[in-house]
Image (cartoon, rainbow, N blue to C red):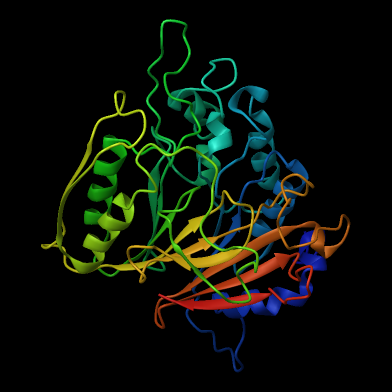
Length: 381
């Protein structure tokens, strides 16, 4: 396959030089090449749009500048039980037939576990893992994994990716066999919280960290700019919350960034009789200060940039749905048009460690309904 044989690469040729610049790829004359930057292709809320997922995988594996790809949750169309999940594995496998495959990571969203307390609609955490992650570990480049949350070190770039599961709802059931808590509520577990503390403590000293998750870290503050959809007034979301729009993860990240100690308890504000008080006992003082890049999130199906409400130095990037469906793009200001460049909505996320800047480059639909140009944007971290 030639470098530009794929349809997505061909019709996005106009942004190839921008993608390459963000990733520091290219010939600068007399054979000079600068050190490449880490660059990841981001999709979100694919909602079983098989064609758009295939387009993303094609672009990922054809473009030299890209190191990995990720879907930020909501792989399924609506609920866990609607299909056997093999469509996702088939799409990932097909991408390996044409090129040397690059890793493609999976984040679990609210629709992947299901939005119900009924067993025939929603799944346990183990069932979700067995359906959407375990069969695809080889496409993620991970030899083994037992949880829906994990971390990856990109040693060449000294960057660490931490993937969280925002829906760690207990699997407890009532006398009718129904789940006691609806599966789609945002919920942290003590086990994942402890794991996050341990993982951050083990991050190599000079590595910069980004956290991928489906939902936003807290209530947040919007950054008004061309990359933020004008109609967005604040961090939204319709899922019920068990610990509120909790600051527990930003609290942990802040302690890690400052190389400090955090001892704090978080009581549930809903389902109080079913959920424990979570406890953070973290001491990062021996490790010293860390560098945090951003949270990468989906869920709201729109573009916006923001920061944590509690910690303005913690960046949040929300990505629009990569699906090509009227329902999935309801409320999004990016028009989609089949069989054109605007059919797809993908984003390159590149990290310039030296300048402490991350770059966003839109591949696909990059002009809003009011003709705001959303081709590229850069944010300091």
